[in-house]
Image (cartoon, rainbow, N blue to C red; front, side, top):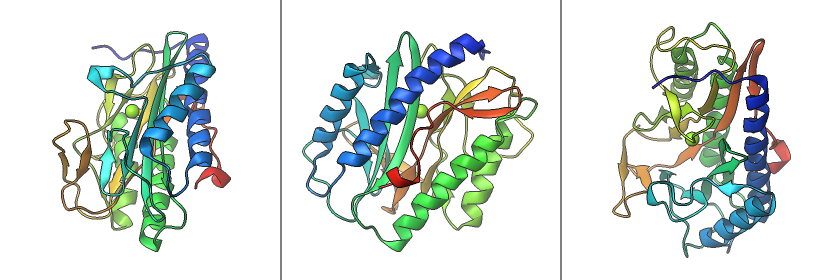
Length: 256
Ligand code: MG
C-alpha cells in the first residue's frame, strides 16, 4: 500500500478533523471527575462530535461499539466504554477519532482523575514528552525509525517501557493508512519522510514490562504485568520546515 503525500488543501481538511478531536478531548478532560462512568464520557463525546458536524470514526470500526476508547490504569488502549465508574487516582487514556468532510483525525490523551500517585504523574509526563520528541523527528528527509527511536530511547532512559504490539500509522482519507509508525527500533531505518505525509504518532508507555494482552472482550489491551500504562497521540503533518501538530488544542491547563 502506498504512502500518500497530501496537498496543502488536504492537510487543512485533516487539520479540521483533528482539531475536532482535540476539542472533544478538551471537553472530556473538563468533564472528568470521580464518579463519572466511561459510558457517560462516550455519550458526551458522541454528542459533541456530531454537534460539530463530524462522525465518531471509531463507532462501527471493525465492529467497535462506541465513539471513544477509554483505557483505565493497567489498560493500554482500545478500552470499551461501559458502566465502570472512574475513581479518584485513576489514570484514563482516552482515544478519539473523527471523520469530517471525508478526512480523518485521531488523537489521544491520558488524564488523571483527581490527584494521582507520583508514579502516575511521572508516567504521564514521560509519555507526553516522548510523543513530543517523536514528533520533533517528523521532518522531510528523516526516516520513520528516527521517530521510533526518539520515543523509545527517551522512555527507556526514564526507566519505563514502550509497547511493541501496537504502533502509530498514516492517516488521511482512512483512519489507518501506511506507513506503520512503531515506538521502538533503530534510527535511520524505515520509510523516508516526505513533505505532505500525515502521521498519527502514539506512544503507549508502561511502568513495567512492554508485554500486553487482549482481554476476553476482544478489544481491551492491558499490560501483562498489571502495571500502569499511558497513551498520548497527535495527528502530525510533515511540513517543509518540520512537523505541524494538526490535533494540537490541548494545553497544560487541560491536563487533568
Ligand atoms: Mg491512532
